[in-house]
Length: 387
Image (tube, rainbow, N blue to C red; front, side, top):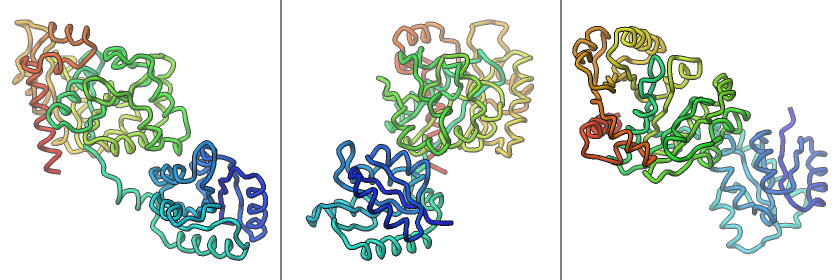
């Protein structure tokens, strides 16, 4: 099969002449007349070589190269800069941003063909992009939070855990809500009507780039970076986009030291694929017989995904003050799994947090319940450092 070369140049004569010349040499040619179009084609077509002009009006070749080198899909595609710029500094800049070779206009067709042939030969001897990417990207510590059924406080726990991790570590922390059509964090934290998750799930999996995911993050005054689900009920059908979910988690993990995932309830297919990508899982429950039984089945289901039970933490959420509340020891016995933390009821704290549109732990850090969240974060940081 003929090797594909993508030519990115705003000069239409260059596109036509160079494209025709290389086509006669047996190469398959694709063309883009500006930087933005070139990036899109590079992601979609994954050419074997990119021939790139520097001086373009919308986005110069240096910026195009930077973006190509930041993207796992295009990081290893050889780039030949082909430009009228002749100064040494221009060439140095080209190599610094990630170009593999540099030619100045005009050049003899034989010289261009020789450079193209040499770059393609070297490229064929390189490691696959996935291997190279894995060796260069740092992956953060991903925590999945879920429950057996709704209404148990998954989103609240995820938000306060993320805020606690940020408070304790002073590192980048992403709070990601992965339940399309059921978003609540955006409204709770003062950032409604977000479409980041929807856009990621609706697109092609090759478009789930680190750059696109990063652009979807919403900064919050708590210091967290939010990746939010929509509130539109019809978006719930997007949970079938399992490949996009996996690509999303992979990208998120390169953007922060800690990533806390609000996975909602149960074990739909996308959660089954995402959980093995997490360093640990937190299951939340309340002390009622039916919930305990459902949670026991949920934990068995998680373990059935070949996830070590030791990485599953259980949090007992006592949301109401009641003498009838089952003791945590009894809940633990019935569950057959250790309970790592019990959260005490604090309705006034959460009411204040809702009014301030911020995680509860940020409003009253010394509150007993806030301290319980912070202790969970401390334990996670210890495990993260030990891994």
